[in-house]
Image 1 (cartoon, helix red, strand yellow):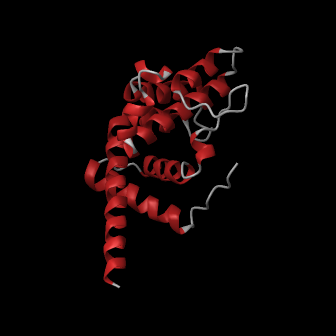
Image 2: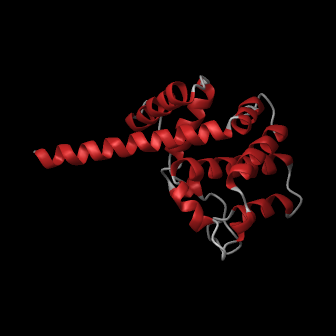
Length: 180
């Protein structure tokens, strides 16, 4: 598994600034813990093994929410395992709906098990379930998971604003590179 970047790493600080600006200025949601969570999510999901941490019986990454949901049902999982899976489903749906919404058509294509899954509703639901299965003394605390559920749409919009800013920075870098 890839190593986690420190909060002092320039990429982490850049994402933190983008997320804070998006949530505070564009969304109007001033919640430092939520902003920190989203920043860490973006940094973590740079690594593909963090987007797809679960494996099937053959060692292949589980990329469908329907398959992740079945993990919570099979083998009578402990509440902790179920909380971890639901938290990841919340993170997974938040990432795809906020950062790469155009990929939802591919992720939910007719030939995929996720064809009937609404990523918005499932994300809200999974964070709510994870919050019920977690405690305040866990990381992340149950109250933060509840806020992720309650403010899912705002977080999606905020991540979309982050994406737009990243794209603007890329375009600016390209145009600056053309001038030199």
